[in-house]
Each structure stands twice: as structure tokens, then as C-alpha cells.
Figure 1: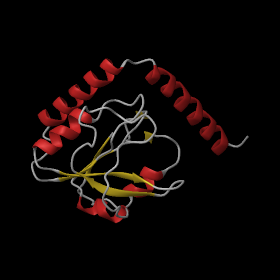
Figure 2: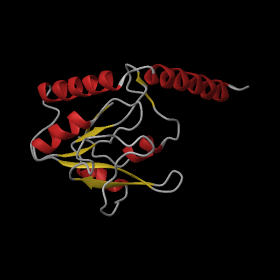
Figure 3: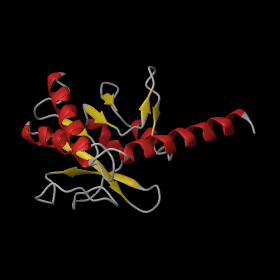
Length: 165
């Protein structure tokens, strides 16, 4: 096995371990983590009124993004979220509000806007881009789901955009 294959195998192992740990968290723990995330983002002035933010809607055992997304809506942000297509095909659509009034999270696919999807070039308008991650190191290298979709999409961001995981 060459070095590249060893790295891929190690990343697969890390992902599996992270998913197992995450599945052991309760819905209350994920909601509280989401609340703290929103609180810290506001304290750090990451969310600026009337700015464009690219984020994601959580699903399954992921941390609840609901409080952070609500904070963005409350500050009149334009919120872009991934819009899944077939396979690795993903676009971005503007999210206005969640369709589920009770705030419940879909466990199979993230909640998606009904409007048309745009390509990754729409990220040039985002001042802040929030990406999901299992882990991030001190150099900003992110361990995600393994498909590389966010990495490819981030190539289209503005040079001044802040990227956080």
C-alpha cells in the first residue's frame, strides 16, 4: 500500500470513529451545542447584518445548525445552503426559513430550499462560509465526509471570505 492509500485508509478510520462518537450524543446535547455555536458566532461578530453567508442545514446526528441559522435570519443575512442533486452534484440555494414549523430535522437529507440552485460561483458573494467537519487541524485542513465536494466548491470563494468549520 502506497502512502496515498495509507492516508485514505487512516481518514476512513477517523471518519468512522467520529461518526460513532457523534451518534452517542443525545438530541439535547446537539441542540445545546448548536445554541452555544450561535452564541459564540454572535460574540465573535462572525454574523454581520445583511451579509451573505454560505452554511448548511444539519441532519441526523450532526450538531443542530438551527440556532445559528435563526441568528442569521434575525440579522437579515442572505443564507445560502447546499442543494443536493444526483451523486456528487450539488448547487447552492437561498434558504429563507425552515419548512418544518416545529424545527425538526430531516434525518435522510438536509432541509433544502424550493428555489432554483446556483453553481459554486455564487460563493463569491459570501462573506462567511460555514462548512461541516469531523475535525480541523491547526493549519485549517478539514476532515469531512470524504467526497471532496466542499473543497471543490471553496475554490470559488472570494479571497476575503472567512471559512469556518
